[in-house]
Amino acid sequence: MQLPQTVVGADGSAPAGVAVEQAAREAACHGSSLRIVHTVNWVPPPGFASVLSEAGEKALREGGERVLAEAETAARSVAPEVEVGTTLSMGDPRTVLTELSREALMTVVGSNGTSGIASGLLGSVARHLVTHAEGPVMVAREPSASSAPVVVGLDGSAEAEAATAFAFAEAAACAEPLLALHAWSEWSVPPSPPDDPSLRYARAPGQLKEGEERLLAQALSGWCERYPQVSVERRTVRERARQALIEASRSARLLVLGRRGKGGFAGLRLGSVSNAAVQHAHCSVVVVHGRRTDPKAGGPGPLLARPAV
Image (cartoon, rainbow, N blue to C red):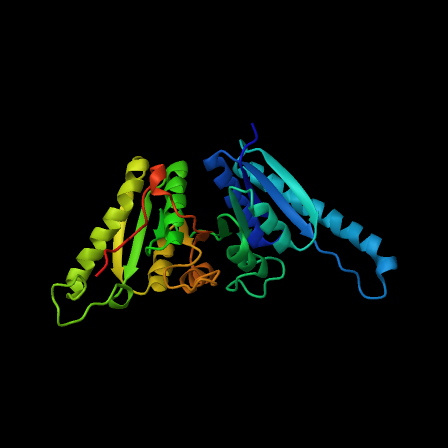
């Protein structure tokens, strides 16, 4: 039987080296194989195609084989039990990895590659994948904490539901605790006329917080029942979501988010909160594309679903 596959991009850079090692650990946790991919995007200078094309392509291929060999050695040293394969492809790495993501358990890339301008900027390949890939995408960074939980951000969207499913499965597979974080403010809950105290959200901030805590507990109950082995901490904070998530990432091994949240319009591929977290988080970030769980199939229902007011 063919194993599910974790895919990682390798280009010889230090961030890609981090990605390869983390992808190997993920493959070991989830019992998947590991596919290390290097792409060669050779475009000869105008007017010199016939002279330089063959020699240039050969040199790039040989360099690519060396990159793959080094990455394979690194992966096997981290997870010797994992089945590792390598692929050298011609073409744009964004296109190649996006296509492979359709069947991958997860696609892993470094925060920036050999063309990265500065360590604080997200590379073009990583940015493209978190926006366009079909499955979960990990942007790998060295964690700031050696032993730390998986953190998942919840906001009530279908994307957050998919992120929660991934986060519970990740925590269970890697035997790690899970922190479920819900950031809220008076502006993130349905408004009510201030002159009618009987309405749900015409209340003081303290009462709002209690309501948000109850909603978070209700949203997680189905997942906690499905994964009883996962230790879950629930945390609600009265703060902007991007700041809360970036701060939580300081003491996290992995931050898991939906691609876009409740505030995103229909055509938006990557929400502002997810974009900020991918750019500035202090740990690796997994961005998950939303696939709503069917309640008839026995899965948990929509997360943080507030009653109409």
